[in-house]
Amino acid sequence: MKTFHNPHHALHQGREEMFRGRMVPCHEVPARLDFVLTELQRRPLGELLTPGISDAELDTAIAGVHSARYTAFLAGAWDEWVAMDPANAQRDALPSVWPLGNRHAFRTDVLPQNFTARLGLFSFDSGSPLMAGTWAAARGGAACALAAAREVLGGARSAFALTRPPGHHAGPDFFGGYCFLNNAAIAAQTLRDGGQQRVAVLDVDYHHGNGTQTIFYERADVLTVSIHGDPATEYPFFLGHADERGAGAGLGFNLNLPLPRGTGFEAWCAALDTAIDAIDDFNADALVVPMGLDTFEGDPISGFTLKSEDYDTVGRMIAAAGVPTVFVFEGGYAVAEVGVNAVNLLEGFCR
Ligand code: SP5
Ligand code: ZN
Image (cartoon, rainbow, N blue to C red; front, side, top):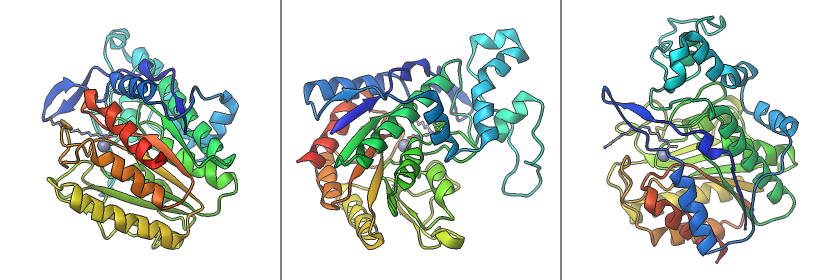
């Protein structure tokens, strides 16, 4: 299995995120990716490559899942932040005001001139700092997803997009949950554009993939399946319930498998069986796995109790689905263990 890693990832390096009214050190740190790279060098799965993707190709792929005004916002966000006050160059940009999207007491057709307003319009939390290198880093991650999808379109059984920042919380026109561009959605859309008729997404991150679900919610050609902490108690809270089954043409093509905080491997595996059955029934031509390792027992912000050796089983179960697969790196904040856990899963798949 080839790995495409993002050489620009460390340009995105948040200092602090808002948590319960305080600023705390960011969980989503560059060392996460470095630990995965180190483990891949210790236990090679195949070539380690940087994606050879042109800016124009990447722009087209990003435009396949994100709105033009959102990407224009992201591209200029840092310069606008600093233009508001030169002292802002010393701190990360964080949103502080949001439209009440669920109460219809807002306009989204009028683009606010005020940058603080746009920062809120295009986001959903205050835990995702944006800085000078965020756009370049996010583009580098998206390029990994595009390159990995192309690898599978070219006939490979699998490929790994070792992306940072992560992507599955980013929607058509919003960032949040440490995510800015939805790498997994870009991979899925690339597979569709490359001629795969039915593409499934199997999100195994601890958190519900609200961005990915939103992107594909009304489509029947991309099945989205997610196993995650129950949004009744777990982030991102406002999406990810079992009764969200898709809408319009997409009705029946979204499957959420929420599990209570504290869930262990046995119950988690039963959910994975259900997920894989759904992917079988869908008759997927290709699979994208947003691969979060924050289901690990040692994860500092999550609540499942998978052990390092369990990831080997997870990989083997996904391989048994028998579908060409693009793995896309997502969460996992037990930094010292995230590399071992990621490579255990991928090695299990390759067995
Ligand atoms: C990609 C991904 O996994 N994003 C997760 C974003 C979670 N953001 C909310 C984090 C809440 C932090 N809780 C800290 C608990 C410290 N004990
Ligand atoms: Zn997560």
